[in-house]
Image 1: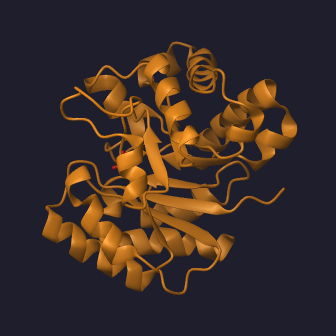
Image 2 (image 1 turned 180 degrees about the vertical axis):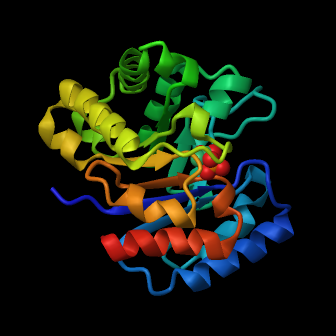
Length: 255
Ligand code: PEP
């Protein structure tokens, strides 16, 4: 089964609203010729509605960086999936390692958010990944299995087909240290095998699995050429439109 590439820029806590509008506009114009690759950007909550206006009618899609699993109420600092949907977000990044490290995200809260996102008709980008200590300690497979199984608990096969996974080794995020093509491929193949164990080969073959962790213009083509790498979740290099363009163009050429 041929899977479409998906290149998503996670802007994290970067760019003011006006800077976000400028960056989104640059990306829209650079993505005009992109036909076969999904290009997605995830600005801050504050900038998301304005960015949504800028990308309207273009082939750039909107993601939010997180949501809460409740519909509404006394959850200071959070936004709901209906709020995301109203402004036109199509994707929600869930379980990013920074959320797991700094904001008490667990496999259980990831699962609640995944189910909420799917119930609203939006697509979760489910982030999984091991620390260097876990990899060096021989725990790579058990950690990833637990994260993937936890995220998909009680998610139907039909809904699983609407999900995206981002494999992001924690030691490669924002560090400039990138997994080698072979390391990323081997690990992503393993992640796909976990999906296959849960849902069978057909679902596993159609779920897009992104690589994330210091993906840059100079290493993107090599990573994206790997059989089980279907895109990228990009942090630093997504903040400069020319670098982000290089990465989604590399995907487009391979696609
Ligand atoms: C990320 O935050 O998801 C990420 C991959 O960041 P960077 O590209 O900066 O390593």
